[in-house]
Length: 436
RNA sequence: GGCCCCGUCGUCCAGAGGCCUAGGACGCUGGGUUUUCAACCCAGAAACGCCGGUUCGAAUCCGGUCGGGGCUGCCA
Image 1 (spheres, rainbow, N blue to C red):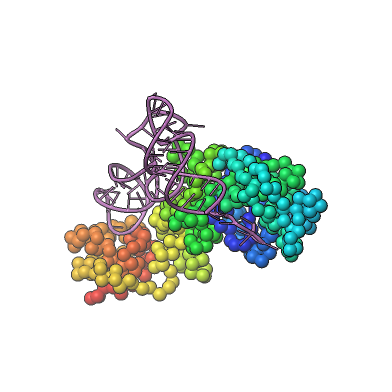
Image 2 (image 1 turned 30 degrees about the vertical axis):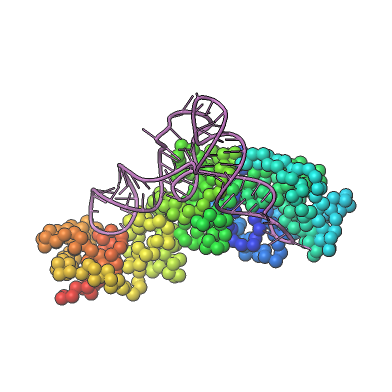
């Protein structure tokens, strides 16, 4: 069994193509089959090397690997169609000689009979039937002698020995053309499978007008490969038993193209986000710390200083508990960086009070005189003074939170103060105490 | 317009004639926990597009209809 995916490098790896790749890959892996990746760049106008690179890198990022094809090689050359124009031209000439194609205005068209029909079995849709009278004579070679997708793709599928073609439903109506071509070249027919399309929230084919639909854009948004992989599995398929979060090995074990739904699915970011949060929480401590630092450095476009790292490491765990994407980290830890500290004035107005002021004054004094500024002591002092002044937690803690972190929303207060350290905490409290 | 595909909660998925007064998840609403935000727990609202047929019995099979989508390029 040999499957393939043949992306066109006319854009970054699209979510829809990634899902098609994923299903092909899952099926190949679950059946001990081969998986091939080739580059269908017959559209020389729009194909760009940077897109090819983006496609390859993001496939790899998702954990989709291949046994033959672009980059990994194989016995068929570069696996880039632009390097095989001679081969396609040769096939077109062969068809011309056999009288199965003809020239028109310099282009070569495949002659489709007026009568008859093409039948085939689609793995997810069942039996398909197309009337030849509905199929136009289609172009094989353009006037400039470059091959079209129909020709190149079909020849490659034959030459590379593809036994199962699973692609998007948008190509379903082109399949009879490909079958006609294969028949006229005396090639054995592969199995066909047309996966439903992914839709945007408006119910239309997912495309650029739905915003960023590239895999890399989700990576840039702080989505984990494991979460995106898992989420995409669920678009048109499920492993059964209402199982939704699972590892790739289980997906490989359970996956079957025959179980894939024929109806389109809407790509719903909300569930992806939720799932990403679930995955983030599962990351082991050390690995998360690495991602944590990477993500912060990325968003501030510089390396972290030693003192910043010291502070940040104290707050890794609480942050891991409360983010949905890696990009949410920065918002949570901003107050710990060596950057100008600012207090959200709206939040401040909201929490400032006489009682709160008294409370801050008190804990500041205690902080100054305390020997050890550990998490335990901080909590002890803050709770004790709350009782001393008979102040509700909300009144005392929220004003302190804004004074120390700048906003009403932050990681847990004691941890935040502990991470900030004694000196800075005392200084920030002083700045917010009106009658020092 | 023509050809083709599709049709279960807002969304994703379960359901392959009786187990369905339709199940799970996201989201949403309410509540609990709580120093904020999350996380977590509990509860709730929410769907078989419609009409016929087959059958003792249909979300499940068939037909029609309506609705959505794709293709209709010398793009892929």
